[in-house]
Image 1 (cartoon, rainbow, N blue to C red):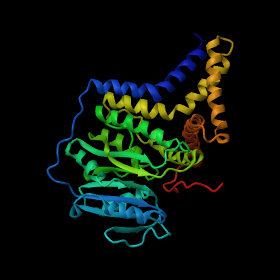
Image 2: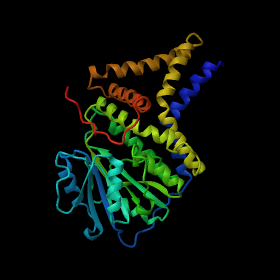
Image 3: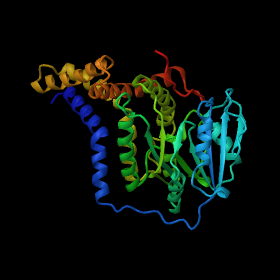
Image 4: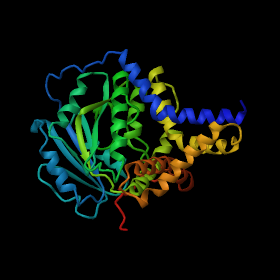
Length: 373
């Protein structure tokens, strides 16, 4: 086998492993490991629920009502809206909620400012456009009955996974993988819609990054577990087009790459064998996917004429790209939409790296809103 053929099959194998094989491996590992149930809490701990928001005037009132409707003892729940330089009414005073009117510095500094004044033993966080089920906070907090747990993320679902946006399918798969990771150890990432952390485990991060990606692996390095609780549910309205999701994920990845490359994620010190495998499989290889695809395509072109199998594999790769290109012409086709979603989301990983290297990464960003056609 030539060196080019080795490169091709390694690239193809790693792509298949990170997207499918890893989940199957986790499923096999959970079959031989018993699930550890959290100890029951003797009484609900005090919780501060924090929402950092910049110009979320369209949804913040609805979000506040959602927070006030949570089934949790009122004398043990504090609500804080940390307005990050908003100028659209987000920082208006609201009954039952502490509002911090902060200068524009970014989401992480706004969360830090709220954590500084929070009274709760548990710090819970959400986004302004994410709405929690009534019992979500109770489900989230109960996992802290395990004294080893420092971080808990809940389950995020989307209101309109109707075929026009494949994010719903993506998150169903991600949530399945996170549940398996949680059963055998710790998750490798969370989401900003619904999560909580013990006060003593809270960390101040590089403001260019996010809690979503940085908290879980840093918790593990410090001896905590970072777990997933599917019973703690939140819903969010997705950007209504795949192109909008591409822009959103590109922006997110420009903030993620500093954590991946220089923030300690790839440093295995502090990881056990299982968690190191999780980081390699779910983070390092997943983020390397666009570069693996390029390597596979280039190697495949070079290998044409070396056997019929390379003709078939090249046809498959080109068919995927063609399907992605044709999807806007037939928006009713779920197959074409899924192909376009995969190609654009994979490309967003590389585009985010390009943005981070070319322009650097700022602490602030705007939430992606669909642009008028």
